[in-house]
Amino acid sequence: MTASNEEPLWKQRAVERSTRAVKLRAEQKVQRFLDAAQAIIIEKGTTDFTVQEVVDRSRQSLRSFYQHFDGKHELLLALFEDALRRSTEQIASAASGPADPLERLKIAVQLLFELSRPDPATKHPLFSEFASQLMMSHPDEVAIAHAPLLALFTELTAGVEAAGRLRAGVRPRRAAALVMQTAMFIARSHSASGENVHPLTAEEVWDFCAGGVSGEIRQV
Image (cartoon, rainbow, N blue to C red):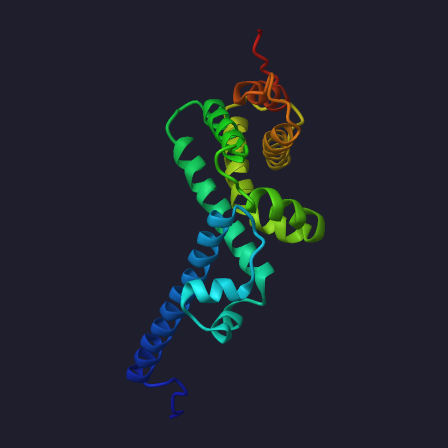
């Protein structure tokens, strides 16, 4: 008979418990760094801060910081991804109600537009300063950060296709990407341009996108 090469079950359980504990401690440390950085950004209204400020605010060590992040850029990227994840969850929840797939997509587009608009009373440097820099310097990282949001919009657009209401020749994923980028770009660039006399509305943005997705254009 051949002896088994597997570890004893008691040893496997002990290792699993130890691994879970280490993972939990690491997650807690990372979250403290993220919370500290977020608090500093809110206070300053900018991403212009130092790693040492984050370390001091989190009450952890510089060594611990570099065990979890390569540097400030990776910390900001983590905050950016987390903010996009929360926005995606908010949009998914809001769009889950209606039975009409085109109505679900409409809700998602309009909410994305509103969430992407700079609030005059509250600065969002992660979506203005850092996002703009990131798009130019690390487009692959931007694509990865937006992946959950794109997946949601692709799912919603596929629902429109399944209902037979997607315009002929339009592919759900490509349409989802175009709709997403249109809503976010218009929200950010229009506000930044100072054109506040007759600002574009979420309804107008949806009417434009709806024409491209389904060919259904509302008469005004």
